[in-house]
Image (cartoon, rainbow, N blue to C red; front, side, top):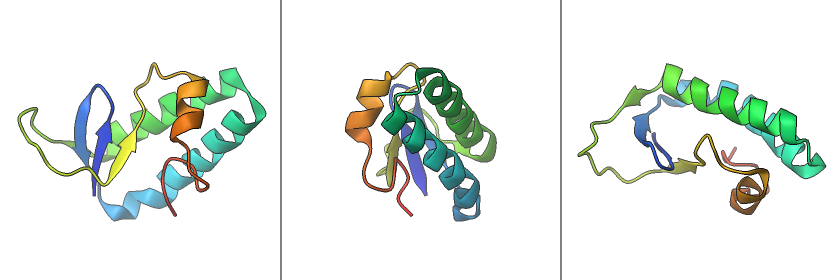
Length: 92
C-alpha cells in the first residue's frame, strides 16, 4: 500500500504492518475525541515514526496514487479531527 504523509512524501508499506498501525490509530482517535492534546501529539509522532520505520520511502519524483493519506507531524488536533473517519485515519 502507498501511504502519503502530508508535506513529506510517499512510503510503500506492506499490509502485514497494518495491525500495529491500526492500534496506534485507535489510540489517536480516542485522544482526538477526548481532546487529549499531549496524548494526541505523542501518538501521532509514534504513528508517523512507525510508518517511516516499517515502510520504504518512494523517490521524490515518484507519483504513485496514495491509498492512505496521513497528516504531517505538525498537524493540530483540530486538523486531524477533520481528517478522521469513523475508523480513524486508517480504515479497518
